[in-house]
Image (cartoon, rainbow, N blue to C red):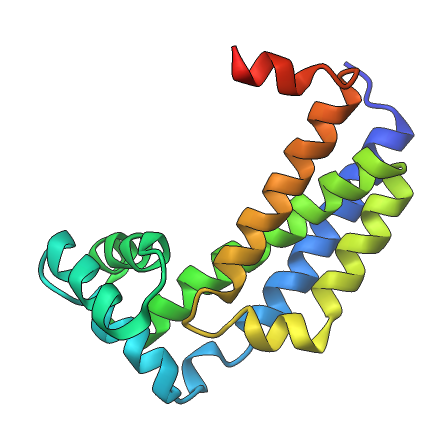
Length: 166
C-alpha cells in the first residue's frame, strides 16, 4: 500500500506540531510552584465524594462544576499530586492544538490548519495558561470543539439546526 507524499507530509507536520506543543507545555512541569487559585482547584477536586466536590464548587467558585468533577476523576486515576493536576491541563491544551488544526482545515485548507495549530502551540500565553491547574485549557478546548462542530453543522447546508431540534 502506497502512501501519497501529501499524506506523509500531513502526518509529519501534525506529529511535529504536537511534539513542539507537548515539549513546551511539559518543560519543567514538575518545577512549577502551585499558585493560590490552583490550590483552590486541587482542594476542591481532592474532596472524597462527587457530592462534596459539587458542594465545594458552589461555595468557593460559583461556577458550573464540570471542570472540578473531571479533575476529581483524573486525580483518582492519575494520582493526587500537583503534577498530575498539571498534566490534566496539559492534556486539554494538547486537545486545543488538535481541534485548532481541524478547525483551520475546515475553515480554509490544511495549510491554514497547520499554521493556526503551530501558532497556538508556540504562543507564550497559551503555554503559560495551558499548564495551570485551573479551567482555562478545559474551557478553551470545549469552546474550540463547539466552534468546530458549529462550522461542520453550517457546512452541511444550513439545515443542521432543524435536524438538531427533531
